[in-house]
View 1 (spheres, rainbow, N blue to C red):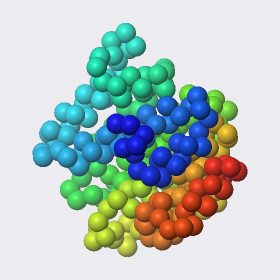
View 2: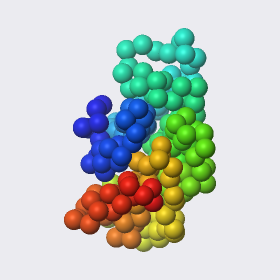
View 3: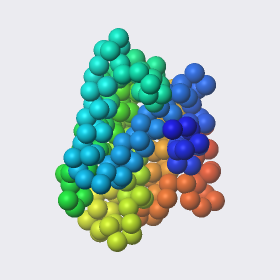
View 4: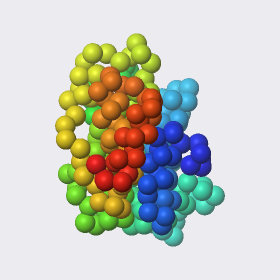
Length: 217
């Protein structure tokens, strides 16, 4: 999966990364997208679980035992280094979504926690001084807005919308190294206000992204 395969808001956010960090941001977002597709495309739960189990084992492997021939895994190894095993929480989150029939708050909370863990691992890797509560808050808002915006209209229940909107609040200020997350957070807040609208929709979204990309919130 290349950057061009990512959603438009992800492509915009990556554009605000420091040049030396763009590969790490792209690999996290591509990995999340890959897991989502594995879950959505699984004809049976067991098929999806097998795919997720491969990733869980690969992420936990030592550097010398990494499976060969998977470009995305190679990018994750390069971008996350010793923090790569922490991405197993993201796999767990998507597995909760896979097994939920129907999608319930417990599964949504698990995915939110897994996505937060992925962003926290990236923050630790790229900027040890990153504000952990701020990263968790921004990542959680993006996690909910992205999920809500991708659901069919009939699945956006009032309860789900209310749960997602409960994460609203003040912007989370990001360091320069984590500026792409600030962009996604700003777009997520805008999406949640609109009840789950696409993150990059309407003329105002570009200005929202620009402001967050420049000022970090």
